[in-house]
Image (cartoon, rainbow, N blue to C red; front, side):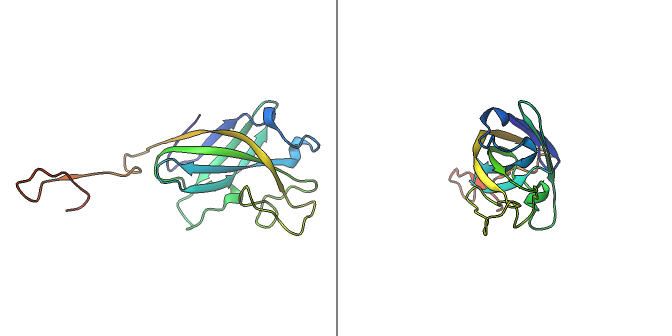
Length: 164
C-alpha cells in the first residue's frame, strides 16, 4: 500500500521488476504509466512519475501535486488526486525500442492508447505489472466531503445534510 498526504508531492515504491513483461529491452528503456482510480466516485487519473528509478526489485516513483493549470501534465508526473481517501493504483509497463521520450505523442496517455505510426521513439504498453491501494490522507481536514447536520425544518425528526 502506498501512503501519501493530499495536496503534496509523494513517493511510491512498487515491485515492478518481478512482473516485468518486455525483458528484451534494458531497464533504461522502460517507464511505467500509473492509473489511479478513486474508490469513492470512480474518477480515473493517469501519470508517469516525475522521476522513476528502477532498482533490482522495485521502482521508486515521484509524483508532484499541482494546483494549476486546470489539467496536470501527466508526462511530467503532475497529479491532482482529490478528494483524500482510497485509490486503486495500476502500474502499466511501457517500453521503447529507441530513445525514451515521455511526452505527448511519444508516450501512451492511457493503457489502451496506441501511438501511430509505429516508430522506435514511441512507447508501447506491454501490460499490467502491479496493482495495489493508495491511501491519500487529509492534510488540513478539508479535502474530504464534509457533511453538516442542520436543525429539522419541522417537528418531524429529520436529518438534513448540506446547506440549509
